[in-house]
Amino acid sequence: MNRTKILTLLIGAVLAAVPARGQENVEAIVAQNVRPLLPQNGRGGGVAVAVRMNGNTQFFNYGFANLSRNERVTADSIFNLGSVGKLFATTILAEAVKRGELSFDDPVAKYVTELQRGGDVRRITLGEIASHTSGLPDHPGQYERWHRGRYTWPDFVRFLNAWKADAKHEPGKQYLYSDTGMVLLRIALQRRFNTPFARLMHQRITGPLGMTSTALPLPRDLLGRAVQGYGSQGQPIGNPGMEGGDFEWPGSGQIYSPPRDMATFLTANMGELANHGPMENAMALTQQPVFTVNPHFSQALAWQNVTSGNLTILDKNGGLPNTSTWIGFTPQRHIGVVILCNRGKQPATRIGRQLLHALAQDQSQASTEGQPDPNAN
Image (cartoon, rainbow, N blue to C red; front, side, top):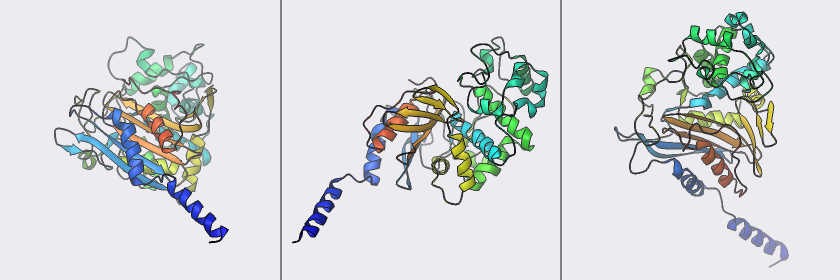
């Protein structure tokens, strides 16, 4: 046997010894890492995971979509995205900027004209809202502590016009996570295009990407696939498809989507979806750092850009009392993950980042930087 044949056999033996990231191996890694998200003692709740790697997408599902109806979680179960839904507004914004339809530097009051009667709110730009640097509080009730109940549109306008900046709430000068600002961004986009946000989302993102089961709010024909939401201890909270939060007008609630659709959204954000170049260019723009919070964390347009040990991770989390969600990927390894859990107060960000490290076979410490999981245990 000549040296060439011997060398070929040796290389083949070495390659055979390297663990292949096949279905069984990935499934074992996912199952091990998401175990802390699963309810104990047969309580309500479950987890859906989508993994994108090696140019393929795999789905892994655990637990119950609806315990009382004995319905298991599937890749087509529809979850409340919570704040992961903010990525849709910033994607529409970035695409509009790419098209020359508006600018990141446009004052929000240019489009939401009721705010032209306000004070400091007139200085806030669309780009500042999208990067959580507007200075607006996370929730308006943190500023108007006397207010009771949800905010109607007139309530919201009153709050915004009365809001005053200060040293810790100065537009463009600091990172301050703001659900308030992102809801305002939806309104600005609606006004610019004279189109309800839900329809705009369909026209510009979900329709072109074929995300047929993603909606705001859920229409009646999709309600049957909506998961029951549960509290952290497995107790049911609300009804499937319910809209919650601080605001009470059409289009201000949460976006709903199944793992299958969110895997498509993830694939597009990773630049791996064929024939969608312009949208992927807009998505790439949303991922660019805008504000450096510290050496390991920069805020992009809704996306967080974190240094996580040896990896760079782009991610976004979401959480309400009855849902915990996360989407993230590592660009240099071309690995992405979506986690949708129908229980509140779960550490989806920590689990998601640890899962990315495990799939990348990277043993460095996963980052804890960025917006924490809401009220996670």
